[in-house]
Amino acid sequence: MHDTTNLEARGIPTVFVASEVFQQAAQAQAEALGFDAARVFVAHPIQDRKDEEMRVLADGAIEEILQQLQT
View 1 (cartoon, rainbow, N blue to C red):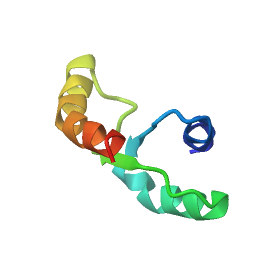
View 2: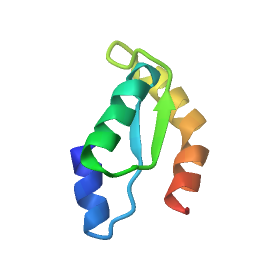
View 3: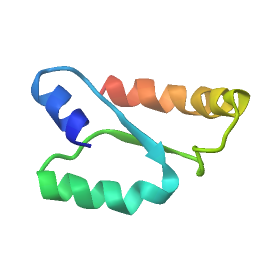
């Protein structure tokens, strides 16, 4: 979230992507930083996924990520 805030402050459009279990933590961090970052959440867990599983997650999220970047 700090990187997202930093990039946005420099004029670089950014979307924060995390697994869904971090939704509350992301909201709390956004409130603490005073910055409501664009964010997209994907299925949890991420850590143990194989490359093909990660591609499927990315393919499922790309449209929402692109939409967030354009707003």
